[in-house]
Image 1 (cartoon, one colour):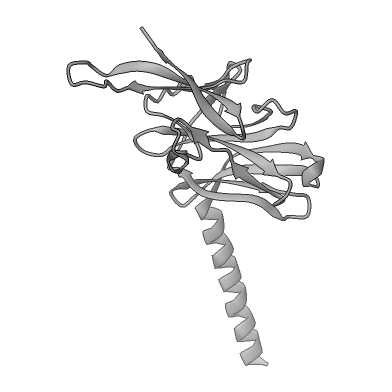
Image 2: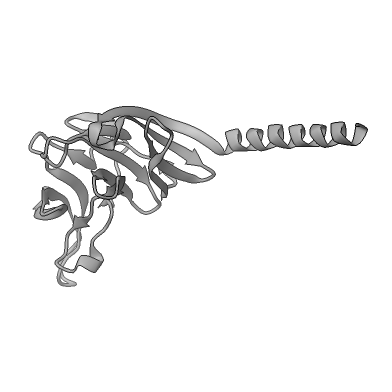
Amino acid sequence: MKKFNSMLLVLTIFIIFSSTIHSEEIEMIKSAKMKLEAAGGELTINKFFAGNEICVEIIDETGKKLLEMHGIGTQEKLFSLRGKATGLAVADVTGDGVEEVLASAFYGPASALYVFKFDEAGKKFAPIKFADSDDAYLHREYMVSDLPATDGTDMRIDDELNLIARGKIFPSSAEESVKTGEYHFKFIDEVFKLIEIKELK
């Protein structure tokens, strides 16, 4: 009996210790809710730190994870959605009448904005690709800004559903200097396609 009680005590201490470590490792940044009947009803979106990484998860009402993405960045970062700064949002930015999940982070040299769309066939969320090249292998899973702004204006979504990233425009010749510009993306053929680069004066 003493042996059983000792084992029970050790197990209890282990569970408490494990849960304490888990709670210290996970730091919630922001949560949001969305309703999507195709995904089973109400969903919970969590953006959190796990260790030194920013992660995003989307969970249905039964607890099933429809998205689990680790390491989107190392620091919290804001973007601007129709003039409002946020780091996590639910909005239709593809124009199809179905909301997507948007999350941003700073990952070192630059900032990233992810747009997660529900795939009915796979019953999961996945990042929409950003295409600034004809080569599909060079498409990214996020929009990037290499001129970060703390107020989120370096990555923004306007009323016409253009996703705009402020960034450097590199010259084609050594005689020219690097300029500041905006890269405009639009949802076309299931990707966010680069439609325009505007130089900022």
